[in-house]
Image (cartoon, rainbow, N blue to C red; front, side):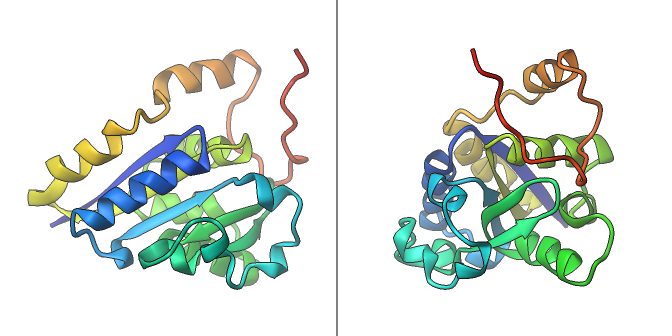
Length: 178
């Protein structure tokens, strides 16, 4: 049996280091996905995704194939892997669900899928790994070793601000000015 393990991080750079650690541990690039925001994406055209992997630090493995896609409700993101392909396919085909559908088809609950999509919308980066049951402890150790966002605390923060679910028709997220 396989499981899908997913964590969200505040920065693309942290997520990148997680992907590199997973690959160094022997996890196949085909079983890793990353979807998130990177500062260079906000200033780029989502159609310019080809070859961005090297520019974002992906010398080999999954990160070498990273590109940009535009996701409704989020805007342009850097993405690679099976999760990104599912979301991009839904977007290109006009199918409902996009990123939410990609997360739920990977086995996540609707609540978790909405949380992960909203986290990407608000500037975070998500790493998902498909792994055999016997490899779960090692993969969890890598994912959790990089201090992922505390899901429950972040959900409480989102809800305190009036959020209830990811809305792909929403305008791009702009953090409140403090």
